[in-house]
Length: 417
Image: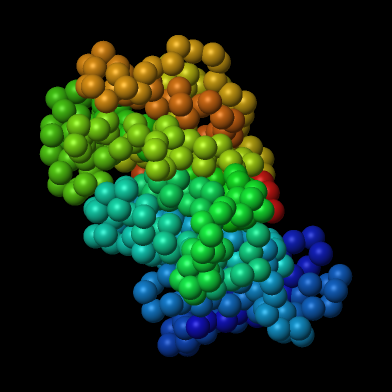
C-alpha cells in the first residue's frame, strides 16, 4: 500500500510534488528518493474545512489497484461513486495511474477509482468477449469490497472501451443482492420474484446508477478498411492483408477486423450494437447519463479518427475549421449529437444469414448513434509527442506523454459526479 498526504485549497488542488518535478533541484531529490517510491508524500490543505487528507492506493496482489481518499481526522471516507478504468491492448492498470490521481484530487470525497488489470499484457489477445466477462466479474468483486458505492462510471482507452461495452452488457440489470443471497443459502424457496428487487435493479449496472461512459481512442467501429488503421495509409492491399493476418492478435484481432463468425453468428462487434437474448449491450449503453468519445484527429497510427469518434468519414470536420481551446490547448473540437436521424433499419436476421450487401460499419454507426454522444476531438499537432498520440491522449506514462494532461483535465472537469 502506498499513501500520499495532500493539501487542497478552496479553488482546486495545488500539489507541491508537481512543482518539485521542475528545476534542477528535483534531479537531486529524485536520486535521493529513488529507493522510496513505494511511499510518496504530497502535501495538500483543504482550507474551507481545515482538514488533511491522505490519498491511498491499494493493490490486491494481482496488479489491480484502488485509489481513494482518507480523512486523517475522521478515518476512511465513504465515497459513493465508483470509477472503473480499463486499459487497452498489451496495457496494464498502471497506464491509468496519472488520470486516476487527477480524478481523486478533483473529487476527494466523492469517488473511488479502480484501475483494472484482469486484462493485462498478453491476456488482451483473448478476445473482447472473454475480457468483458473477466471485467464484469472483477467489477462485482470491487462493489462487494466497497458497499457504500451507489453510482458507477467507466473510462476505457483503445480496446478497453470495447471491453467495457461488453462488460456493461453482462452487468446490466444484474441483481447482485439475489446472487449473494443464493451464495449464502438464503434464496426464496417459493420461486416468486420480489418486485421490489426487480425495481431496484431496473436500468442499473450491477445494481448501481450508471453515470459516465467515457472512451479514449477506442475503435468502436472496428479496424477493418476505411482507413480505420491510419498506419496503412488507406492502402487497400495492406488493409486486406492485415484483415487476413488478424489472427496474429489472437481472438481480439479477429474481433477488431470483423473476421470472426463463430457458429454462423455475425461478428462480435455487430452483436454488441444490439440487445441479444442474454446480453443487452445497447440498453446498457443507453442507461448511462452521458457517453463521451475522445478521438485523435491526427498522428494516431493505430486507431482512426472516424472509428474513435463514431462518424462516417464524410462527417469528419474539415481540419481548417478546427480551433484550439485556451484552457485545453489540445482540444480542437467539441460536438454533441442528441440522436441519429431516422434511417432505414437493417435487419439483424439478414446479417445473420450472411447478406453481403450490408455495410457492417454503417450498421454499427446507425445503432450506436441512436443515443446521444459527446464527441471530443483532440490534436497534438505541433507537439513533440504527436507521434505517440495514441498513448499521449491517455497520458500512459507521464514523462513520455505529458502533453495529454489537458485532455485528462478536460475529462475530469466535465465528469458528472
